[in-house]
Every structure is written in C-alpha cells, then in structure tokens.
Length: 578
Image (cartoon, rainbow, N blue to C red; front, side, top):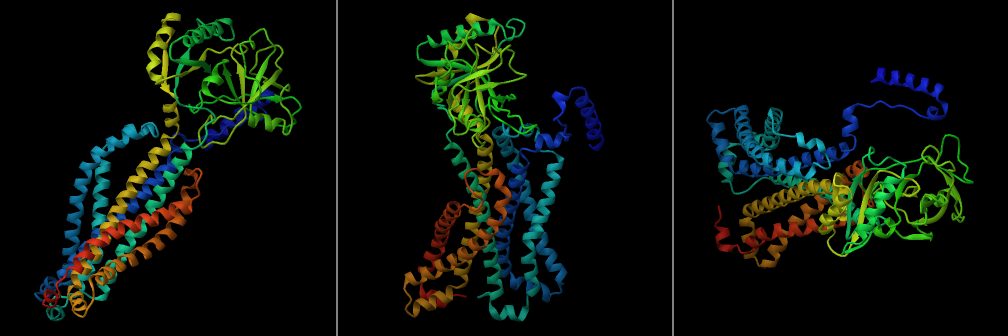
C-alpha cells in the first residue's frame, strides 16, 4: 500500500507540473479494496455483532440460572457421590460435560435454523450489503459454531459446577432439601439482573435505530413522492450525439406523447433522480462571490426539462421556473436551490445574478442568468445535509441520459406499459431501465437503516423474551422454595393480596436494579453507534423511558403467574410441605 501510494504521488506531481490548472489541487489516496467495499457497512456489522454477543450472554445467564436451580435440587445426589468416593474434579467434570452436551445439541439445532434464516437475511439485505449474496454455511461456520457452543457450555455451566463443591452429606441430609442458602438465592438473582441489564442494552440499540428510521421517514425530501412514476432512458451516442438537436427533439416528443396519455397529470425529466445514489458536481463561478484560493464552489448540477418541477412538486421560492422559452435560442438561464443562493449571495436578491460553469458548459458565452430559486431537495439521502444545487434547461445543455418522471392520477406503475408503448413508437430499439414508483425509490433510500433496525430489533426482542423467562424462572423457583414460609404467613393472617405484593415486589426489585445497571451500560455503549443515528441522540430520553415502561409491563406479566400460584397456597398443605 505504501509503495503504491508513493508511486501515484509521483505521477500526480508530474501531472501537476505539466497541467497546473487541472492538477494543482488534486491528490490521490490509495485504499484497499476490502476497506473500500466494507467501509460503509462496517459500523452496522460491528453493532450487530455486539448485539449477538449480548444475546448469547443473556441466553447463557438464563440457562445457567436454570442449571443452578437444578444443581441445588441435586445437592443430595452430589453429596452421596462425594461420600462414595467421587472427587471434586470428577463432580465438576460431570456437570460441565452435561452442560457442553446440552450446548452442542443447541448448536446443532442452531445450524439447522441458521440455514433457513440466513437465506431470509440475504434476501432482505442484499441491497444493503451486496456481499451477503456470497454468504453460505460452510466448514468455517460449522467450526465456529462448535467452538462457540463449547465455550457457551463452559460459561453457563461454570457456576452450577462450582456449586457441586459445596455438597456436604451430613448437612444435606439434615436440610432434607427444604431450603436453599442465601448465596444460592443471590447467585440466581444476580444472573436475572444481568439478563435484564443486557436486555436493556439491546432494547436501547434497537429503539434508537427504530427512532432513527422514524425520523428519516418524517424528513421532507423537497418533493412529493406519491403518484409518481420514474424510469431511466439512455439514448445511444451513435444515434443521438450529445449537445446536438437530436436528444432535445426526442425528449420533447416523448414528453408531449406522455402528457397526452389519460391519467397523466404532468411529466418531466431530469439527468439524476433524487435519492438515486448518484450525483454530478460542477465547478461554479458565481458573479461577485469571492472564495479562497483552491476553494472553488462545486454545486450539484442537474439537467431538467420544464415540466420536471411541476411533476416532482418542487416548490418555487422566488422568480420563475424554467420554461419552454428557455431554449437553445434564448439567453442562458439557470435555477438555484435555496442553499446555493444563500451561500453565494447572502441577504441579497439572487435574481438577475450570473453564474459560470467553466469546463462543463460548451457555450461560447458561458454566463448564465439566475431566473429563479427553488426549495432544497435531499438528493444524496434523507440524512444528508442540504447542498448547493443548480438546474440547467435541457434545451440549452443537451444530454443523452435522462430519468422520466410522470405524475399520475392513480397507481403510477399501472401506466408503465402505456408509456413504454409510446416510447417504442418513437424508437423501438431504445431500452428502458429502473422502472419504479418514487415511493419505492424513497423506501430504497432508507433500506440500510430499515435493515439494521429490523435485525437489531429482532435481537432485542429475543433478548427481552429470554430476560423475562429468566425473571419468571427466578420468581417461580423462589415461590416453590418459600412455600412453607408463605403458608406460615397466611396462617398468621396474611391476605392473598399481601402474598401477591410480596412476590411482585421481589420481581420489581430485580427489574429496578437491572434497568439501572443496563441504562448506565447502554449510555456508555450507544455512543459507539452515534454515526448510525439521525435526529436522535445516543442518550435519547424518550427511548430509555419507553424501554423502562416496556420492561415493567412484561416483568409484571412474568411476576403474575408465580404470584397467583403463591396466593392460592393452602396453609395446611404448606405447613406439611417437605
């Protein structure tokens, strides 16, 4: 990489000496193909990878909690094994082996499930990450799954395995397995709190991306996308030479025929469609605008026909639109966006001012007069800032490639066939591509954010489900262990609502601690995904408040089942409970 950069720098310096006007301010930067391809999606993939790691930890904590409860019930078994000569290493090895077998079985099921879900993800995300098409289940994936399964088995089996070392025959037989120690209870609650905290982090990430998607869809793109049909038309240069009368005549006849169709309100054409992932910039010299050396303004340049602004519903701020009178015989004219007009002539009237586009305008008199100012259009993306934009009439700057935009009374795609038929009558050999409604183009512009939000939201939902199951497991096991205590309370006069409150309050204590820890962790980690957000901050209070309300609701549901079971305990049965 360093050698290639040095060689190209030398070539660039030689070009700058030979052509100082064109290459004096240019530079060359060498990047690897991998970085060039993956740079745009790397942040999203890292966030998703972290989310998957959190989900794995939640699952491990959940299974560890269940196995810990099972290990407590097996205290008598482990005590007897120890009394019969089993060493501590053998007991730990037995529990870890059981856990690893369990995790490997889960890994096998995961591979089968992943085979099908991967196809869904590839189909949904191919537009966002084209390299997904090459993703498949291979030996590397299987080896990685096996490794993660073994590590997960060790991870969630470690705490239950260590509990086997506490098995004591005399104490176990004396306890009659009717109670559990405070340390056991603390371990189970700690695991449940950890699940809630990790679920908060996942929900925070998913919530922020969903809020970002919502904010993007609420952005005014500068045009109306409803009832708008688009299609790309490229004229071959051999038949329609650029900057000649042929392209102008063809598109004029095409637009006249399209405007005559039933159901068409108006039609126009533009060189580059908004939100189409393309752009074209041109060096500009606004009259009376002083800029620093080497900082020539480069606005985006668009070639349009007169009906384009009406079809797109791009509003006029001042002056007039480009008209049919702005043809090849009329004085050169140009339309500016609000940002361009304000940048070049702040607090001044831009109408009547002149702009030159050197190097891009073939006219012998390249000064163009500003005849109007239109609203800014989100050309590069809904999350991009407003840019300087200039619009040139197609009759004065003929180009061979335009995108047809047609505003209709009904479903725009229903008129695609008739428009193609009219096009074929003008030139039967002319191809048409990218036929779509503007609503589809708008949706495609946020497909990356929608894909990320859907994946992270799905992982957050799974994390929430596992966390709720973990809380339910802790409370349910706690109720079963405290059956005798609950019976005594009821025998001494405790009402059912008191028992319900006892169990529910225990669940909400876990919730409060988990939400507090998870919020602190999420506030620290969501800053790393700030470049994926739009319109919201990484510590958005509405998102975190919504997460707290959602968790409270689902944890309340998780508490109700064991709470109701506790409230229906018969005191006489509970007092005889062993």
